[in-house]
Image (cartoon, rainbow, N blue to C red; front, side):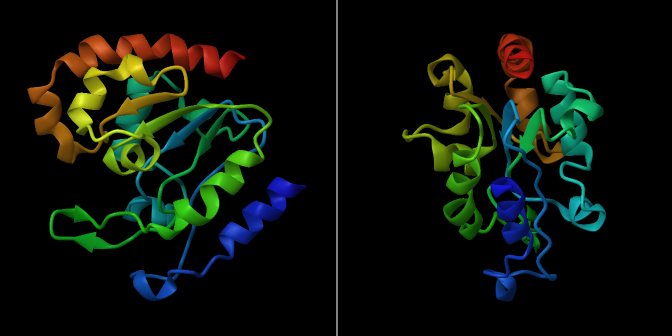
Amino acid sequence: MIINSLHHRILSCKECVASLPFSPKPILQFSAKAKLVIIGQAPGIKAHESMTPWNDASGERLRNWLKISDEQFYDESLIALVPMGFCYPGKGKSGDLPPRKECAEKWHQLIFNNFEAPRLKILVGSYAQNYYLDDKLTLTQRCKAWESYLPHYLVLPHPSPRNNIWLKKNLWFETEVLPNYLSAIENALTD
């Protein structure tokens, strides 16, 4: 019941309405039973229009990286999708604007406090990593030091096609790091 009330409060939030290009449409999924938490940036325009998180090429690549089916990914009893910013922030010069800071500060801890047990968190991109990790490393350095964040976190670059250049420069990520993540993900989902 507490989770339902919290979810309703989040969906009704208007805190940053003056800073958004459209009316607020918080897009996230969670339940107290979720076994895995994916913390990304903010919904893109396709997610905003469809009201479905990760409903784009980034989401397809993310599910492929994690070897998670669409059915698993959108099952809130398995996976919580809690972005840094809950609403589409608008378009910038080279992609979407950064996520609004109000959401994580106001809502994340309230959401996570209602989970039944500590959960593995997948930090997608530098915004989530900078918020949750107490270090001054770059995204590349974090991905290389992935083992140091276990058992609480997995670190990923953003799966956006805009990151294709990073992925081509850092082939080790997909060949060496991602395969090591699969057992942690499987363990989290089957616990």
